[in-house]
Image 1 (cartoon, helix red, strand yellow):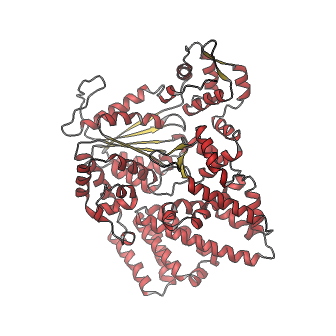
Image 2 (cartoon, one colour):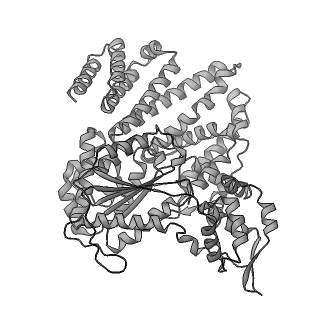
Length: 612
């Protein structure tokens, strides 16, 4: 056999126009740097007029169309000028995790800032206060000594949360000082903005509209076919446009036309476009010209021996009729789902369980989760109560053994379904494309998803040491919240002889979940992600009221918790400008608490809100 040569698939096909626009925008940004000269690809100086506005690029298109590949064409250009190119992506289902993509990008940046003089100059410019604010969000910059070492004390975790203005000023200053010292441009590419959290969108607007830093080029991509006109992302983009400070260039890309697919297929097989025309017509028909699926489809043909190299004729051969019959579906998402259904069950379940935790995962944490799922399923088989029967039904599909996880990961790696995270030990992996993650999640039976997510969240909370749990707290709480109703429904809806014991156990667990939401809310406040904080805190309040039989009983039984949660909720609402809801929460405090300190804190929140 002969492996299918896919090197040409790393090239861009049919995007010459868009690539040219990106190149011109990058040149304009470079030209705005004082004393710098932009050089074209043919070596000529570029004398285009310098724009007075900042530049921003948005790449729109369906999943798998090649938005990321197009954006990353700027990577090599940036490297040639010794500029920075960093990227991060938001993840399906994890929209409440603040700044996830920005943290990823800045962690990558920490690896690129290696010049000691540059580091010392950046530390000096930022100072301790701004360094502390930034380190709350991006610990990698602290670990790489990019920020001032004296900025971190044992009391760091108990230091006051920065205000929104302090937070925004710190990050604006970071990027200004990063670029200005050596006249460097920084390209910040943020992928999958349709899944961005509110705090990230606000920070990106702050950075995009900062006219004192023309050297920062923000490039964002999103699936315009998956969001509504009222989506927060589009609202934020409109705000940037209304500022009249930014020239936003939109590059809308679609799936490849048939003749472009034919070029890709011909180059891959080293054949003429006339000889591959019929095959490429079939490939286009099955994949609709979606680049991601074109490549995956070609690989599947080779793996299924429907595309074979003839060493006698020294060319590739294929049977169009057999291909058409075998691959009946014209649904591109179905192609990936069918592929995953045809690999060993345990290999697929490694992908499915990992998909619940995001686009990347740690092998040791995955093994911990699998072990917890095995234990939970084993315990349920010895019980006949409503919850155990529910667990048995929901996890009946689960076959994965902890001892087989590493071998499964190896096979998934060899099939291109996972890849090793760069600069990591052999224990951190990620999905090469979100289409694979989405297909892996779709493999989980619909009726099992909620309970599986709840148990994964439970595994993280109960098994991880405190320092590791802190790093994945938002993910763990999101998983528990997603599966909470499926977990509690059997006990609430199915009375049994042990119902009193079961309900008491459930009440304790829901109180713990309420407390986890409170902790997550306060953590979000600590990094100025106030919109996300309100979601966690509102959930904490709702859970504690449900658990204790209503508002009155919750305040009577858990007065300290209720006061703490309502005070934090009111402060977060104030920071978001939601003053009506803030007043309602403060009114609750005045109505139910007799604590003088609690009432004084509530008054202080009111005063601060009016002062703002």
